[in-house]
Each structure stands twice: as structure tokens, then as C-alpha cells.
Length: 112
Length: 480
Image (cartoon, one colour):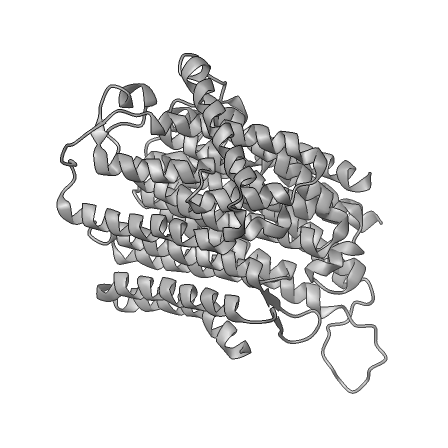
């Protein structure tokens, strides 16, 4: 229960960071925090029934961790990381004309 | 049969990477991908029973392809083909075509999958490819619009992921059917992600700016098919899980009214079309059983309208009323506008009748008001002045444009035959009355009023903030 609360707190911290932080880079970092929370939740759920790495090794009596959420979240980590890389490239391009990277300013300049 | 389906899912991605290797063949390869999907959709319609694929084990990838997904796949194929024709003579690089076909493939995958993780991957890939297409002009504005889109959709998908693992925890499977046994917070989180991705109700208000500020072919692609990748899973869930059906229908009515409310007052062509997309997504959700056919007609019409809007001399309706447009373009515009208003002889009529027949009693009033609003919004296009004049663009790009129109508008006329039973006297009179009332309202009220709504809710911070409110609303909806 305590771990779940921690994971939830991380996710919410990230979420409110996205809303409240003014700087675009900070927003993206906050998004990373949020996705860390989500990933931790998958790992937590995988470890419900046991902590051992799920490798078949003759001795079957050990409580294994559930491999499915781990496999799934691996895909999500890769996707999340590539999206973040893409966003940072876009921010780099934007920083040429908006060196402060304040999202309000960029939004004001680029909305009709 | 299974091999064919798997080959079809992977073909666009394969072609997309092939384009990078042989950039000279970019257009041909992209068009080939669209044709493959088109023939596959036809083959799906001919199958007597749905195609069910279960790869690996019960926690593996599940795909279901039936007539419902057939309609969505056909929409995707036709719109992509039209966009490629439209761009054929322009100076778009191989990169553009590669992204087009990759987005096509990812959306195909979203239309086929019935488990949450395959869907997640498909939606994220489509989001990345859509970002690259939006940012294709490399201007500051296009990059900002793309970044905003990517950011909003990524945050929504993070919520969705939490929902997906909750479903897994309850049922030990990621299948859509697991939603039945899942706790209410799982449904709330998953739906929140899909509502944002599909541009539904207030969480879809990122859509107007994104769709109106992109280039015409990209807007056509986004409005025609990309948002449907978020709508299709909602329709599918509503059909598979009885419990969520009323929620989806409720959002359908709410979205239809919200979108049309903005659309009737909008004075900018592309923004009007974008708001109208929101309202039409509501029509798809309002009657999930027949949502596929409605999605087909809407996808064809909306991408045609976005492509036409690029050939108009201005984006402002006030200026357009002073500058006559050339007659052939006006005719194309009128055909599309009539279809979406539900005028007989075009597929939009059959789709509207079919949707109306499958509404629940409490939905009827709302949807009729939305249909009236559609007629009002499109009266703005129909009553534009026109004259015989040569279009300003050079003939070769115009050829591509007309070829795209033949695909899209021809598709509308051909799709008419799908539901020919709609042609009864009672069914024909009703849309005519709606359109008549809409035109009267346009001439006497909406042509004169100028109402400007504040755009505060479309600001990035608010879009993200609304997600938290939306998930709370959804949670209570599921609980009650």
C-alpha cells in the first residue's frame, strides 16, 4: 500500500509539473517524471506474486515475478524515450527564436 | 487467412522503410500501400465471419477484423490514396511520403487490434508520425503546434497505460473484453486517454488548432483518419462491453453538440471544419453499431473539404463572400457539403438515416439539433459566390487535386449503394426539412451575428488540466 502511494505521488508530481512549470524543458522533464511513475507501477504490479527474475531453472518452487507487465512496459519505455527525444529536438528548434523557452510566450507568438 | 492479415498489417511499415532506401519510388510505394489496404478491406467485407487472431497466448496480441473495422480500414485507404494524389506533383520529399504510409500502417494496426497494448503501440506510432507531418514545414508555428499535439497525446497515453495495467491486474489479460471485470478507475483512465486521442468532448479541444494550422493534405489525413484511431476503440469497447455502452453514447451526444456549437459561429474555414470534425466524431459514437459506415462517409467528406479549402482564395468567410471562387471548385465544395448535411443521393444521407435509426430515445433531440447545426455550418460554404474563371494554381497540381476529388467524392457516391434501403419517402423528407431550416437560420441569424469565443480553453496548460477533471467525471460516470 505504501509503495502504491509513492508511485501515485510520483505520477501526480509529474502531472502537476507539466501544468505548473513555465519552461518547456521543465515540462518535458516533468513528463519524464510522470512516465517514471507509470513504469514503476507496472513493475510493482509485476512483483505482486514474487520478486524472482522469471527464468525457468529446474527448481520451480520459487515465487516468480510476472513477466508480462515487464515485457509490456519495456515497449512503453522505448516509445516514451523516443517521444522525449523528438520533443527535445523540437524545443531546440524553437529555442532559436524564443531563447527563454517560456511556454506562454511561445504560445502567444504562434497562435493566430 | 491469418498470414494474409499479418502481411497486411506489416506491409505499410515495410513500404515506409523501403521508401527511405529507394526515395525515387516514394509516391508509387506509398500509393501501393494504400491500394493493399483498399483491397484488403474489400476482402474483409466478403468474408462470412470475422477474422480473429490470437498470437502467442491469452496475454499476447489479439486482432479482430470484421465489417466494422473494414469500414475504418477502407476510409484509411481512400483518404491516404487521395492525399498522395494531391501531393503527387508538389515538391514534397520522400520523408513526407514515408511518414504518410507509416501513419497509414499504424492506424490500420489500431483498427485491427483488440488488446490495450497493441492499441497503445499503434496510437503512439501514429502520434509520432503525425507530429513529423505537422512539423514538416519546419516553421516555428508548425513545430509548436506539433509539439503541443505530441505532448497532450503523450500525457493522455500515460494515463491510459495505468488503466491498462489495472485491467491486467483484474483479468490477467490485456483484451478489451477484460473491461467488464475491471475496476471503475481502470475504465475511467483508459477512456480518458482515448477521449483525448480521439478528440472527443472538451478533452478534444486540442484538435481545432492542430487541424487548422497544418498544411491541407496533413489536415485531411488528421481529420479523415488519425482521430478515428482513438474513436474506433471506444466504439469497439461499447460493442464488446455492455456496461460502457451508455457512457460512449452520452459522450457521442455531448461531443456532437459541443462541436457544432462552435462550428456555427466560426468565421474561419479550416477552424470551422476542425470543430465540425469534433461534432461528427460524436455522431460516430452516438450509435456504435453503425459507427463504421458513418466514419467512412465522414472521413471521405472531411478530407475532401480540407483539400478544397486549400484551393480557396482566403480562409476567412467574410472575404470569401466578396471574392468569387471558380465554378468547378465550388461544385466539388457543394457536393461535399450536401453529403455531410445529409442530402439524398450521397452517402452522407444513408449514414445519417442509419445512425438515427440506431439512436436511443434520449439521444434523438440532441442529435437532431446537431444535424441542424451541421446544415447551418455548411450553408456558409454552399452560398459562396462563384464564377467561371481559371484557377490560379498551375495545371499539374490541379490534376492531382481533381484526382483526389474523384477518389473521395466518387467514393461518396459509390458508398450510397451500401444502404439503399434508406430511400423511403419519410427518410427523404426529414433531411430536406432539416437542411431547409438550417439554411433559413443561416440567412436570417447566423450570417449576421459575429460571436467570438475566448480561446483560453485551447491553451496548452488548460488542455492538460482538463484531463484531470475529465478523469474524475469519467470515474463518477462509471460508478453510477
